[in-house]
Length: 483
Image (cartoon, rainbow, N blue to C red; front, top):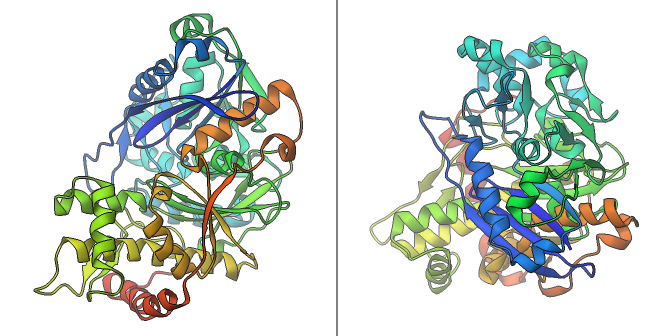
């Protein structure tokens, strides 16, 4: 058995795989996000640890006793600041926190080669600008910082006592020379830090340490090796076999991501495309990232009094596409690709006296699909060809939404059995690679295809004018901003 743990934003998921790759057990535990001020998004690192233990302990004890290795995945970019005693100095600042917009401009000015080194624009979501903000606004805390860890790596510290990270997650800090796969002294220095404050870097399938004895006893398993793992998107890609040049996936989680594996470093910061290391040796990837995807479904379900996501999807399907005049811009937490705008906020346009919950639900499904299509176009502008997309994440459960997305993309969507398991599956496979050996092509095979959704020509035509109206709407709700 191999255990994968995913430290998500809304919860922690633990998944056990047997040696054939079949899921032998799962456990989950919920997390909440604190927003004490506008643009802020924080979590208590201790909550990650409590949720991790709860998720692992939810798996059958017999399965846990058979675990031979553990991999960790997690939400990217979060700044977990530790003092000399390795305890958090403040709540972690998360990936969808937008407070450090001004600090991004400072970093770009201070390090003219920033985009060449990191392959990315400085965005508030990344870790480095967050530390510049802390240095400026919370100097007493900054002076105490001994170590900065990403969320999953704080959990690793609690598991093994080791300060380590993998290159796919670390590349999202904006402190990594992504082409050279190492920390950048120049960018670290610009944020007032040195490599001594950083964890040691590993490839995703390398062992970073062993489970501490007392944790092994708590979790009911042997003392087993723990591997580096990956950022949630890279680990999710490994879980569905996106490991070779040109392989692509769409992740419909809290955020929305289109992920394309590449065999070389191919940055394109001009369109706010991310270019990071993959969690496999010698591989990189490109991403278009959208801060609000399935989270918009939960939000509008609360707003309309729907019983939950399934009820909302049913209301939207009953209403049907193109029924009303409503347009939804899904920028509830700002946006990355292609706008790089942390301060833009979501909006409903075209409301009228006949607007009802079903029409609002339909507008939200369309709006998220159109925003994701903008990201796909940004990848295409970078020379990336996408023939089809494997779909993972909680949003993959809705076939109706899949029809809308396929029509917005004009690209087939391939749904995989077990694809909703997500990054924890890939983390477990990275553990299997480390313990049993083999190649990614042999171990990280795609799950069986459940079904495929091809673009429906009539629906493509029906949504085309609404997609055009969606794209015209962004300049109307926020001033154009240069990259």
